[in-house]
Length: 190
Image 1 (cartoon, helix red, strand yellow):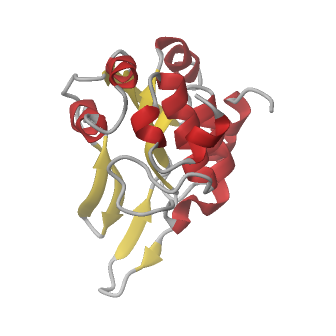
Image 2 (cartoon, helix red, strand yellow; image 1 turned 180 degrees about the horizontal axis):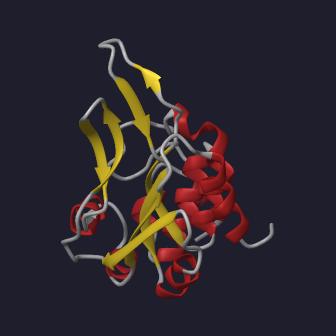
């Protein structure tokens, strides 16, 4: 696919392989493509502002990022309850990259599933007082795949179905830099 087609609105529909999906994902987080399947906005949320280089790099390394969040320090909400967040990123990746990411370990929680597998216990990544308002960890690849059906080329969808659904979580509450730096260090130079 040529460079101009990758920057066009219909680029997702022209994508015929996983590598093209990843490049479109990178361009979306960089602000160079104004759509992403299933995402109702033309750009990422502001919480991605300082990690767009890591997200783009992950995409170009073969990890199609679907969602991410920052590990914000604890803060008191309007209702007086403390809100806590963990850093995370999830998406689809090939087996080789998953094996490399599994080697990171330490304070990084990693889980991967077949693209259509379900199961696994969710891990909270956002709490307000004792209430969990955001969690990741269950195999949601089937739901995520549905977002791409009818939007991307048949070859790209087949490639996507063969990938692993990957969830990475920084296990320390409110810590952000170490999580993203660890991922940044795993990216190929360039």
